[in-house]
Image (tube, rainbow, N blue to C red; front, side):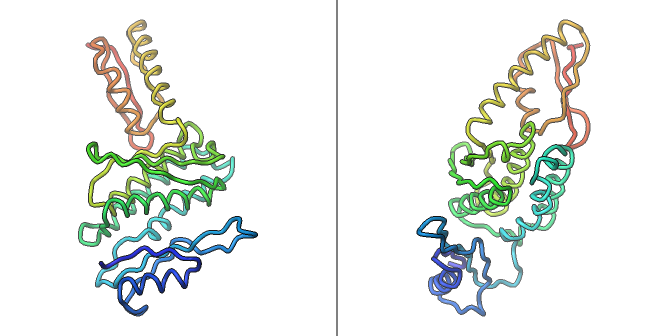
Length: 266
């Protein structure tokens, strides 16, 4: 074992626990503090410290703290009602942050863990972001090994902050979670981040949009240009209309402003 995630009442205790498990000294270790321990008041608000203790390597791989730094600019812009109105800015920053992580991580420096540890890492990451956004949350994960899919369920009383206008904040979180899990898990999972039943309701909305758009195209015999949406939502509409022989669909534009065009079949 070259790495251990330790949990204890204080950061110091967690570090010592990790060092003992790995059988190394502090000089031989690379230590990453995930969360600081909190004593709480009268037993409320108490929180254990979590640290990742790893034997030092010649090349330091990407860690969770690196991903947190890359997403810091996004978090700043997601806080407050004014920032949440800037949908385009949120999309652009999310794209740039994800791209930066992709560029920094290569196969030789990939911090591969077993799938369960990687999923827990992403869960903690999402909890961290939610906390910074002022929407304390817990996260549960459903792993479907056969479909190579992980669904992260964010449970919070402030779902609106996590979802954002038209789901833009939630989509940004999903993109970041996908990047982090991709570079830490052995299995190449597809990631879905959900709050309550938002994804289910959004899927129903997209299906209805696809049907209404197809009807308009067939009635007017003119193409319809939809609003920009993320790739996985465009794919859903492509799928819904794929059996309709009277219309065709294709995407135009550049991310994050890429949009779908539905037009009559020629």
